[in-house]
Length: 360
Image 1: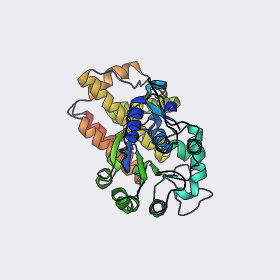
Image 2: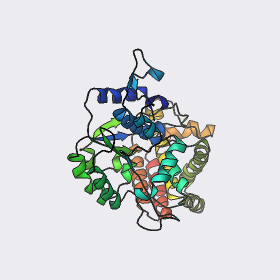
Image 3: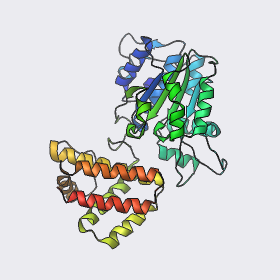
Image 4: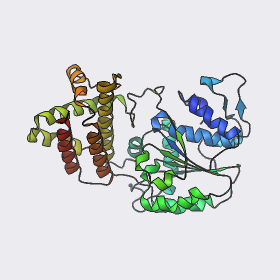
């Protein structure tokens, strides 16, 4: 992956190439941003540029305003572009499948993950990854077995390049054993080693992990055709479906008709856990945008597909309830990620939202 292939992120790309050219590469970094906005693609392009044998520097701003890029032609770049470089190592969430029935780890899915990245141009979501593996409602994790493999990889010498690179995608999916086991490597890495944690939700990361990494914030980019600027970017059909679900839900919470609400909860509970989480993130972002519109006059980037709802609902979100609403959603998302019974978590969230809306 070259920086020129990542549209709309030239500013952060220029910062990254300047870091490498100045020789100030931090051994442990956290790329915080949505995968669809290019956080993973930037991490891979960054690693490719780091080990490129013939870096290109533009006398004038190059493609999309870039100051520099990897050459794309040297042996190192060609292997990076196929994701087959022996000094590039990936760790990512996995779960059991029809072919891996127990003790899953990233090592068993390297071929599948490489194919997934090539097919999605390194911009596929976690939900897309689960769909690619056909794991239905299962949730993935990065486990202690991955930590053991990472420690082993970090102890090896580089095969070909100056730097050995480890990229952990969706690092917030590390379980506690994994996170604790890699702390020492983040603090005292082997020479010429780069560890990049690609993260969408930093609030899901241990503070001890965050404190040991250099933060790189990846801004939202609309160049890829995303529908809204929240924590997640969704396909058009998902946005339309979620908008309908959301409007129905909010209207039921005003009436608090238990039979209708129970039917709604059953509908969402039938989704996979990752889809439930995506919907709740969508709903949480919609509340944030309603608050900004109601209190700061900012335009909303979410269209609920209902003119009356678009006009009236944002006025319900004020400084008196936004914090309570945000906490309620964070608690529900956390519960679903921890495999709580979805119907109970969603019903408790519904009651919490109803209480907060009355505080307007």
